Image (cartoon, rainbow, N blue to C red; front, side, top):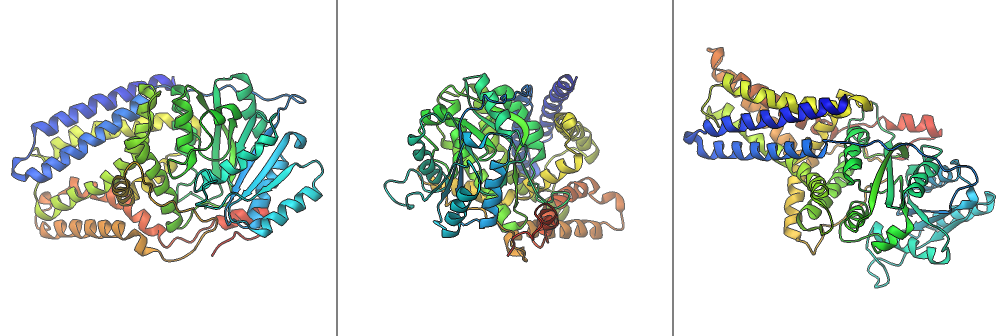
Length: 519
């Protein structure tokens, strides 16, 4: 029934969007050519992303849960790359790996430390001496810039750890786990490896990455809509890509793509594309495989993380090798880049209500009621389509709104990232900045100046339009004001986050009995 509802509403999205766009062309305002042209161009772009949204989420697949039986557990290596994380964070992660429901003798844990921290090294040796049966190694990767290092950032760290497995030929599976991500489901390895054992076509199994956040998840770090809904459609289309942690690889597949790739800023997104275009399959298993101890709940960290994701998506969309991917797979990967670009377009579109309210120029020649009649079915159907995607997946409307506010509120940042990506070209990457594993409380208004400027300009435009037409309320651009308030709800949320005081530490302290690391 859910499939039928989604497809019916998806068709309504396509039809109503075409109906709305056709009406816009018929009402092009030649008295405001620049404004009207930009308005129609941005609407076409929005409609194209809507087509991809419907097309890419036409089907979905929830795999049957399997489990490796007692006494049948294969060997697995767990690679934990570190770089300047606090020793307590890394230790908790290692212990969560050890304490899951999987024989310790079947696990090889490699802590690969790019910072060469003597405290991390001592911690590893201490665990080796105190936990019976543990097989744990400490590795220092080749220095960055060294000709012996295969990849500069996290990929180089992982590839250094991967090279150690030459002495362990019987290990057939490799897990990658970020240094701050705990094993959440005690049967994580049993569930993921069972899928790989069942079907030799699968290169990797990705699980949910959850996080400890402030109530309400104001920074949208839990990515509920993605993990609980959208990625299920990627399962059906064989376009699931690794997300870096809570992930288990088949060793032969990883070796087939030459290890962890370094073409993009980070290895996960690109490694999935490399495997898929070689004929492998990827699987998403909806269990919580990773729980982030610390999520970015300050604006600088959030921007670091999201611009990295955006840059990788842009680079692959523009220049990534796609040979071997079918049409559906290409559509899914292109959608990733268009999503961030759409967020950037959203911020540019704020110019339209500002212009209308301040100059009374209209981008279309129809009256406001006609406009509302034509746009309302399109906007409503898109919203309902997203709701049908999440209905059975425990994603609340508030979480969808929060995801929308964060994603589109960072639109100006994504535009800058897109321009940097274009300027860098295919052969040069923007600088990769690691997300800090601590929360830095502070006043970061300078980081959100574009959002602050857009918000202030909209307030001024709304105020000016009302004051100038106060004697004749029917002349006030009420429809445009509602449009402007939508933009305000998005951009003011990001502005508020610039002086946000995280409450995630309270949950962290309840779980671990000690304060959250912050600066």
